[in-house]
Length: 79
Image 1 (tube, rainbow, N blue to C red):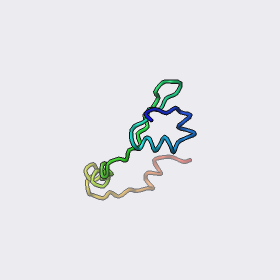
Image 2: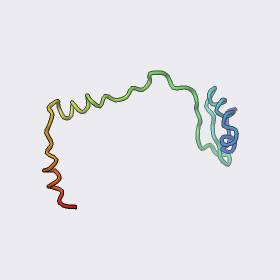
Image 3: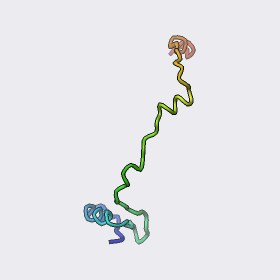
Image 4: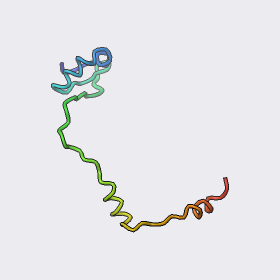
């Protein structure tokens, strides 16, 4: 199977998914290709999460800053 219709995808998903595990499937609607369904597994270790701690230290530095919440609220006015 190299193509499947949207109807087949909805009603026979397990069969289409099994075929997509072997090779990419073109999904068609009214005879036109609208998508490609590729269910091959992604390579392990391809993505690593960003190091937000290192990024914030690079931007803000390591010094801790005191925040006076009362002064912040006074600047906003009354609700």
